[in-house]
Length: 88
Image (cartoon, rainbow, N blue to C red; front, side, top):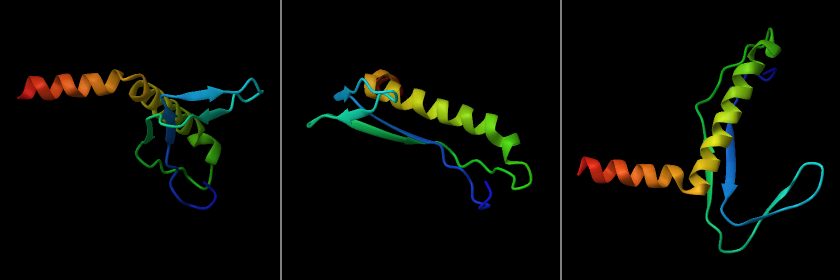
């Protein structure tokens, strides 16, 4: 925010991963797993009061994580295939 650049909410997820039992539950991707990287629209945060933009950034990051989780679980992939089949 202080740099005057927009915040780009993004998240990554893989179908095959090892979750470590550490304080941050670090995820180690396993070989031959499919992954997805999701990015939301850039968010402009004012330089005058960056804390005012924090709820919007938090909501955008949560939405990006939820969307990446859905893609990794195959939920959005199945929904997109179903929508494409219905349109044809």
